[in-house]
Image 1 (spheres, rainbow, N blue to C red):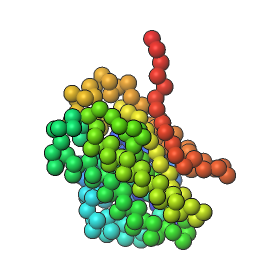
Image 2 (cartoon, helix red, strand yellow):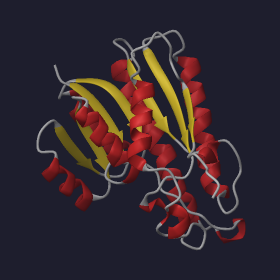
Image 3 (tube, rainbow, N blue to C red):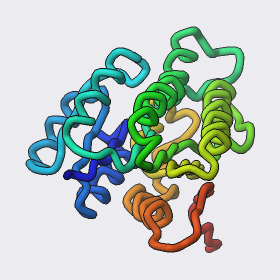
Image 4 (cartoon, rainbow, N blue to C red):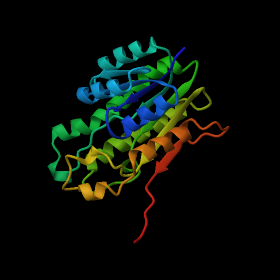
Length: 232
């Protein structure tokens, strides 16, 4: 039976690097994202042991039908929630559209966890929620983004409590700034020059994989990752 890994937000950035790491480690990877063009390009480079699902993770009906389809492909071993979009503005400039954008990732995390957990509760599996260091503190020009990340953290901690002692393992990952196009619409806040000092996404993906799938009798449930800062 195929061992299935689900990655949400896997068409670009850290999500895509996680897709590649999982593929390299013999998972059948199911990539869920709304970037249709990027998904099509990935399908060309990963012609086997890979399937993409294009849609909005904040749409519960889409999530439900997607998980049902994935469950027919094999045994779901791991769900990695990486989908999310930022809106970086000063507090007085946020609009309803900004709030909705930031909350897409939170809703997707809850919907995917809900439907995947129904399938893995008995036989076991891993839930990996990729959040941000913004879930650990308040940041300038990130009030709504931080609010959603704090909510994701609370949800993740509640899952840990609910499944403590079971065959389901829940992980919270809190990376700092990553060198991806995540900030492309916020250059007044994070310049391209500053972005390029952030963590490489491929290295970060490897570190996450190594900790989640470490063959030890110990479990790293929370992973806070930041770049090494050097002085000139």
